[in-house]
Amino acid sequence: MSPTDPTDKKVVHVYDDIEEEDNHLPNWWLAILIGSIVFAFGYWFVYHTAELRPTPLAAYQAEVAALREARIRANPTSPEAIVALSRDAAAMTAGAEVYRTTCAACHGLSGEGIIGPNLTDRYWIHGARPEDMLKAVTEGFPTKGMPAWGPILGPERSLQAAAFVLTLRGKELPGKEPQGDPVE
Ligand code: HEC
Image (tube, rainbow, N blue to C red; front, side, top):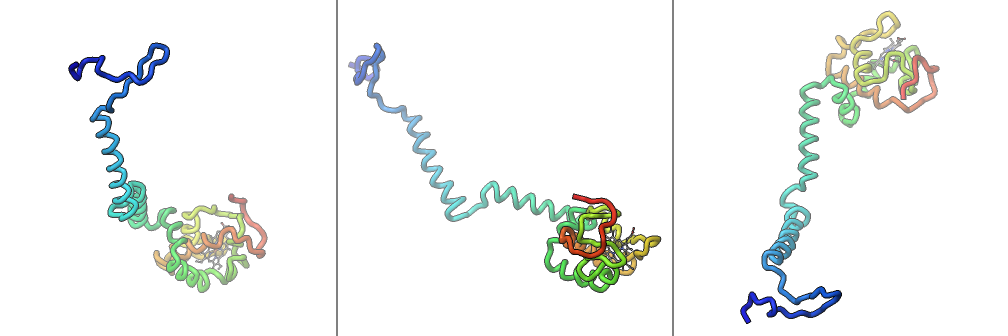
């Protein structure tokens, strides 16, 4: 009997005329199976045990964060940059100081409002977007009793003050009655 002779194969099971033979798995099939097991161990070691390389997800997230930072650096007065500044602890220490010395006299030490509106409620006369805060600080509302602070504070401290107002929002402190429209 030659190895290619079909009768050479051992029939181990017959059912409904279907014969089951006990053949070896093809080598190419076994190679793929064993190869992928070896690869999986290697992959796990490189990415998860030794962490020799960042996982694709971590690499992607780092790339997105770098892009965002570059965009913020390129345009520091963008809404995105003002929001990022409002989450920066050092900048907000500076912002609190600018607020205390420049804004608190009219808006209250905690933003609750005195002559100027309550900055902690959800009512806004001139909008509640980050860019509205920056505009309020730099240009003021001279005909309504708020001077333009941009020329006095300069760009950096104006941005810090605007970002600091974002940190006051939503505190809902009791103070000056709501003015303007509610903003969610
Ligand atoms: C001399 C008083 C005074 C000072 C100082 C002052 N503001 Fe105001 N501010 C006002 C008044 C009054 C208004 C309301 C303007 C209006 O009625 O349109 C106002 C409005 C605002 C608004 C818009 C509020 C809204 O409801 O839309 C923001 C934001 C604001 N001020 C932030 C600041 C910040 C930040 C500073 C400090 C850099 C500051 N203000 C300093 C008097 C002041």
